[in-house]
Length: 265
Ligand SMILES: Nc1ncnc2c1ncn2[C@@H]1O[C@H](COP(=O)(O)OP(=O)(O)OP(=O)(O)O)[C@@H](O)[C@H]1O
Image (cartoon, rainbow, N blue to C red; front, side, top):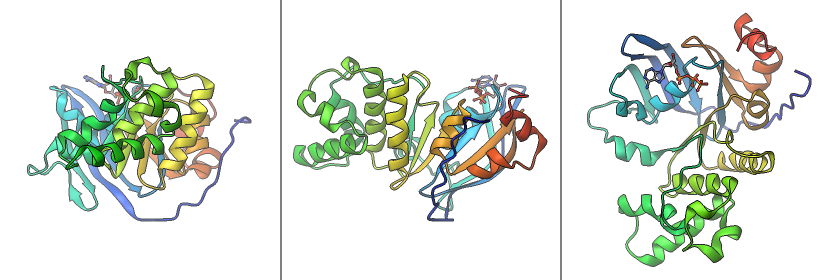
């Protein structure tokens, strides 16, 4: 692909934040994910790419047990975060989702003020003792999400009154307010215009200083722009995983090559 701009940036760590071993997912009789094994690195943006229906979102949702909410879904295998099995019976999925935040395809702010959108998570998780501490968390999260300057004079206005790109940054602020360690993003820019997309992409690059970021994207250009590692899925298999530059310029599997060159998908 000639217009592919691959930005090589150093990955400072080889530390695995998330380890998946033998992960399988069935929805009823549909075998959606087949024996996925991967180590996802800390402080790295990892992109999941592949044709529609290949299992990208299914795997992403395994990482914070969102599939628990799908009645027909059965997940097996092991997913460890910092060495701890997140499917262990003792793990509370609500606590897990504070640690592994998620941003969805369509910006989905709560019908509350900008302030309350961000304050919601820290409040329900009892993270603060008083209003001053909560104010500080809200400001920090909005600054990290590059929304503070636009939002600081209208914190009590409804989140839904923001533009689409601002709403998505508000959702990012909401996700990071609970001090997660991993941020999952399921096509976070698909509802945004090019300018808002560029802002969110820039933000993703900044966020990896604090989090391990995993992004599902249909745009190979976006994967090349924002990620340091890429995983290519096909028909429920994780076909190839490696450095983004290598996956896009010198993939080892013919299925990856076909997808990258536009022959499948
Ligand atoms: N809630 C569900 N119930 C039943 N089947 C599902 C459900 N969610 C996904 N599937 C099936 O699992 C497979 C993988 O779907 P998934 O959404 O993970 O793919 P994807 O790669 O993210 O696709 P897309 O790029 O189109 O979003 C598909 O066959 C899909 O139809």
